[in-house]
Length: 153
Image 1 (cartoon, rainbow, N blue to C red):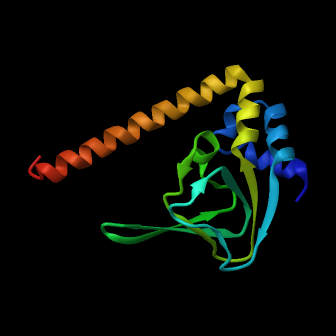
Image 2 (cartoon, rainbow, N blue to C red):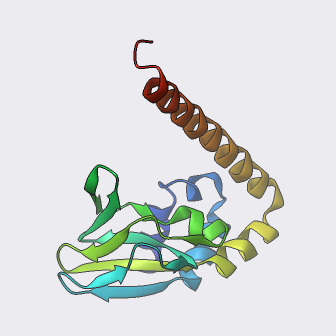
C-alpha cells in the first residue's frame, strides 16, 4: 500500500478527519508499518500505551475482561485502536491480537503531539471533539449507575 493510500484512509478516520492534508501526510510519513501474523499479539490489557494503531488490512480482535466476563470486538481495516494513547499516557483497556495476517500503522504519541503543535487551530477542534465525546460517555455512565441503583426508573 502506498503512502498516498495511507493518507487517504487516515483522512476518513477520527480524529485525523479534523486535520488538514499536510498534517495527515506528516502522521502517515512518521508512522511505522507493522505486519502481524495471525494470532500475533499487538498489546496486552493493562499495558501502558504510548501510541495508536491504525488497521490498514486484516482484522484485530480486542478482548477485555470485566465483571460480566470477557468481551470481544473486532477492529477491521480503517479502524483506529488506542486513540487515547496518542493523547495521554493510559493503560490499555483491552488486549489486541491479530485475527488474521494484518498490517497496522503505529502512530506514536510524540508524532501526534508534534502534529497538534504544528496545527494549533485543528488541535483545538480535536480537543473540543474529544471533550464532547467524553461528556457523552460520562452521561451514559451516569445513566447506567442510576439504573443500577434504582432499576425502576
